[in-house]
Length: 607
Image 1 (tube, rainbow, N blue to C red):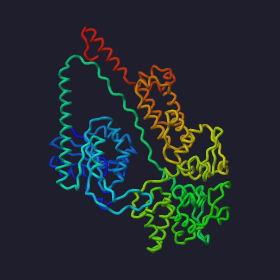
Image 2 (image 1 turned 30 degrees about the horizontal axis):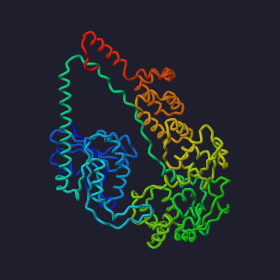
Image 3 (image 1 turned 180 degrees about the vertical axis):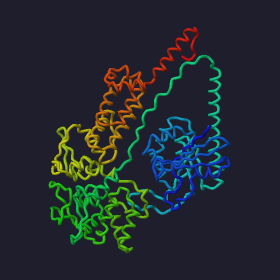
Image 4 (image 1 turned 180 degrees about the horizontal axis):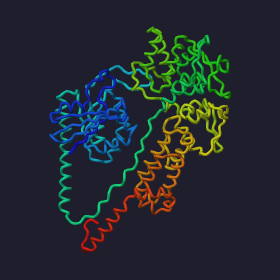
């Protein structure tokens, strides 16, 4: 017999420098008198950065205890099926948070508690919420992209309210010493473990009695359907795509020069404007009256001078003749010497402030000059009308901006340098984003094709709505199909432009929607699963086509009655017949059992 515990959340203070403090679960396992031995091993989900740690131990002498400790809530975003499987197999769930990290608590409350509720799906699994740490007041964070306030701690009433929403038991542990672990957390956890073991023992006993009681010939057992193939999602490479754009300098339409024009650093208007109001002002996206912040306007005027036309000593690579390049003279020589590092910081998408600070310090070797450059970077990245708050910030505390800021330029003519013509309509876009996110478009705009020197590019074989959804994914790294048919159209478009991750997202959407259909809806739907199968095969979606074949076989009794079933090829029909559910063997056994019941002239209490 075993007990499965799943723990979510990070009990460490995200702002504390002490990251060596033991975890709550490990503290309990190491100090509990009930534990006879412990075996821990890191999950191989992500090499070097495990999603969860698995502990195995023996309790109450011979009971097996399995613990999955997930300190990072991102498992719900990156692998929803794994997180649901963990919760579905849990006997006890533990949610941990630090009382001194209100930002993480708010994100837990707003984003992840609803996901936990959905995964529980009304199951009566006990939940323990542990608020850990002694409340303290610190100085406010001053990074420009962080809205957290360290002076605000998570109050007891907020924790109790969260526990009410989940129907959970609430605990406060001021420290992870023996007293709190054993008396409070250990006592509650062991109570629920005993309850779980008692319930399992009762169920096992009832099952045994039922088996002993029923000695007559039993009907054949219907085996479980064959497990469907699991489709694994592909990790996002959104930030890497945009950073590679800077390294390759494709479609660069901006060149930064020192006043003596001795060197050049190339960049892209669309990326710079997506992260800074100062660059919006510099390239005419916004006017000084729109910005309404004198510090930003003054810095733009004192730091940069923009000249249009083509007076470059050497023109930037990849810019078509139809898009005039822009030369930007950097008036501050010290800032200009660090411009390459600053652009890598902006394009990386991770906003690693500590690394930027270290790179500039090594390059300048002067504390005053380093502080001078960093202050200007803070002003460039600040939001107009608000205080600049980049100071002592850590990379993991700053949210990525591209997938929200680039959305502002999606399907707008602002800074657009290419126009797609599709179904009689026009769709503006930006070459830099397209080249960075799609290899086919990179070859199209930088190779020996007509599109490389054209402003208007025709698009065939796809509808306007589908192409807009495709472009939205390129700009924001997300997509939300409205239906299975729309997802299939988007999958076809993704295959056309060889964007594999989008193709996998569409496959996963189609599978999820079909799995959620009840049998009655599946039998009455006008959607042709066989037609989806043929499209998936034609467009090289091997994972989806394999899954659809298993889906038809698993729901054999439904699909075998539909006319579309006759459209399956001989090979597909043989596969479905071989893997059908229920199987021919079961149906034969069922017929034999019915004949036996009839011959005995007795009433079947089961059928």
